[in-house]
Amino acid sequence: MGTTLNFVWEIADTSLDPALEAELLAAAKQETALRLFRDGRISGGLAARLLGLTRLEFLDLLRRHGAPFVAYTDEELERDLRDLSRSARPGSGS
Image 1 (cartoon, rainbow, N blue to C red):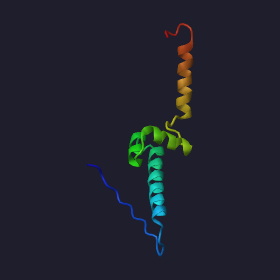
Image 2 (cartoon, one colour):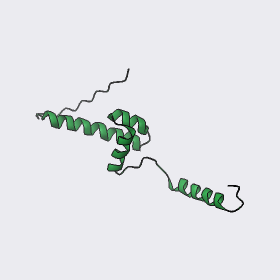
Image 3 (spheres, helix red, strand yellow):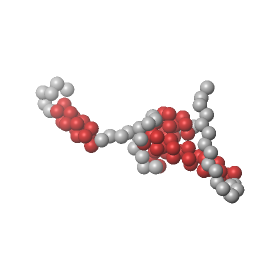
């Protein structure tokens, strides 16, 4: 059995169209899941499940929002390029 989270957003003196209400709720869920994923607090798989998406659909959502699926630092890139350069040299054993 899963956990149910309830979100209350009280809007004073305003009556919302049910379609707009559903859109607001969906947008709040999406932005929350994206933020938690970008901050490294949840995995891509969990973010997809929270949104009711497949992993491929979540990857497409990230693409549409300009968010990378993998956080790859400049230092990691430099290290990997150094390692690749070493392994490509003659006599490196590869």
